[in-house]
View 1: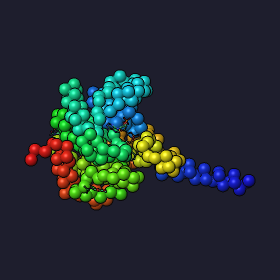
View 2: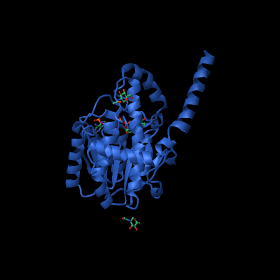
View 3: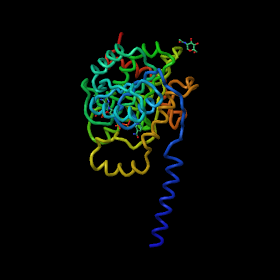
View 4: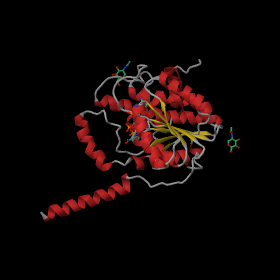
Amino acid sequence: MVSWIVGSAIAIALYVLIYYNFLKGVPWRSDTSLKGKTVIVTGATTSLGKATALDFACRGARVILACRSKERAESAIFDIRKKSGNNQVIYMHLDLASLKSVRAFAETFLRSEPQLHLLINNAGTGSPGQTVDGFNIALGVNHLGHFLLTNLLLERLKQCAPSRIVVLSSLAYCLSRIDFSNLSITGGGLINEVQKYCLSKLCNILFARELANRLEGTNVTSYVVHPGFVFTDVFRDLGLLAKLVFGPIAFLFFQTPMDGVQTTIYCAVQEGIEKFSGRYFADCKVRKVFPHARDDAVAKKLWEVSERMVGLCRH
Ligand SMILES: NC(=O)c1ccc[n+]([C@@H]2O[C@H](COP(=O)([O-])OP(=O)(O)OC[C@H]3O[C@@H](n4cnc5c(N)ncnc54)[C@H](OP(=O)(O)O)[C@@H]3O)[C@@H](O)[C@H]2O)c1
Ligand SMILES: *[C@@H]1O[C@H](CO)[C@@H](O)[C@H](O)[C@H]1NC(C)=O
Ligand SMILES: *[C@@H]1O[C@H](CO)[C@@H](O)[C@H](O)[C@H]1NC(C)=O
């Protein structure tokens, strides 16, 4: 009995120590104001996107929640307005699983909003299935939808420079390699779904890199972020068994959304990081990625292939 209590006490103490020292993430705070700035956050109905939008609203920004569900977005907006006291938080419809919807969003946005200073490509999913345009969901939503969106908004970002693009990726990128003969990999099963997700996150890193190269000299910069492992809805579509295994681990060892957005906010507002445009950040620090994720030739090729896939190609 006594040894059981002592054992548990040690286990709990160890857990608290490990959690606060290694898992919770660095407490980074800044009071940079975003008054007069317009921000888009994609996928801001919940989790990281909602927490990011709330932070920007508290800084006084005009925040556009680009989401596919009006109902879910409006419930998020209600919370964000209440917590931030900022009423300039609005919904615009964007379904990243449809290139047509991406184009319609950009058109509406460009027509109704004169400015854009920050674009946060946050929406992300590991769901199975296909997009309207026939890509696997992870590639289509996480990479291609955002690729088209960013391209359509680029002129406005340039006009409003200095401005920034922050892309949410994941450390999971390192489990993936690019095979240009088969970007939109198919096939079901957990392994395949994870593979698709990891590949889309590698594409996010290469995209931010090539984007930075193309934006050199414009005062528009781009950053890519691993937010940490955060307890969110991201794996809501996993099967029951995977949930039973993954749930308790996530509950014990993952960060809260408020901790998980600090690196995104850092890349959005921290002064003086422009020289790191195109680079990968985690824990509010620039980090070196594995060679396959910093290959400029591959990044350039991915850009050209993506242009063709979304129908942006002029050649
Ligand atoms: N959580 C983590 O531990 C972790 C780790 C590494 C990287 N990340 C990255 O961080 C980002 C945010 O993750 P999260 O954990 O906050 O995810 P989440 O809880 O699953 O939220 C994802 C958001 O994306 C939206 N979304 C999904 N499909 C969409 C579509 N077709 N069109 C528009 N919006 C869509 C969802 O909207 P609905 O409400 O309509 O579903 C939701 O708002 C993702 O890019 C993810 O890859 C997360
Ligand atoms: C693409 O790769 C997946 C496995 O990752 C495979 O199941 C699928 O058949 C491949 N498709 C083509 C067209 O080669
Ligand atoms: C970029 O910003 C610098 C410093 O504010 C400014 O001198 C320069 O003219 C800007 N360049 C462009 C292309 O806007």
